[in-house]
Length: 192
Image: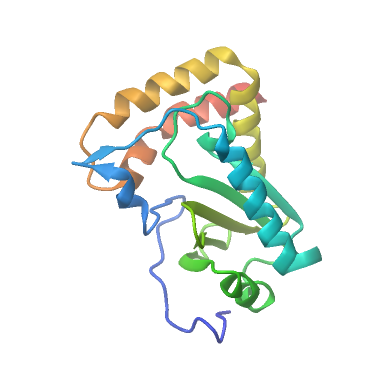
């Protein structure tokens, strides 16, 4: 279902991809721009959480800070990833108009990948990932984050991997993300 406020179709992506429309802004001469951990990232996440909860109220069933900006000491693309669980992410009429009024822009619709919706934030580099409550992808994202927060060896391994891949040339940020997939899977497997 598409919202009356956003009738134009968005490009769909292949299952599991996460090619963010603005993602290529994080490339410089084909290389991924990584930043050292910034202590303001948790503050930016908290600000977005308040904005989301203000406009969605009880419809925001879960709001979590995920991705590398959620892991102290981790190098990251300077984009705060937020995951939002709603009752049914396919029912855009239930949440999309409120998010748009708050300044979020729908950038991707992936019905074939957990009914994922992706929004760009209104005033800072934020990627808001919307899934249905109970979606296994939310659990995977949180488990990965928690493992890297708790395990210094996996943390260091992931930093090395990111730095090694960031210096290569990429056509799209998604290609860089795909190149990390095996390491991410290894770390998630160790998380149990």
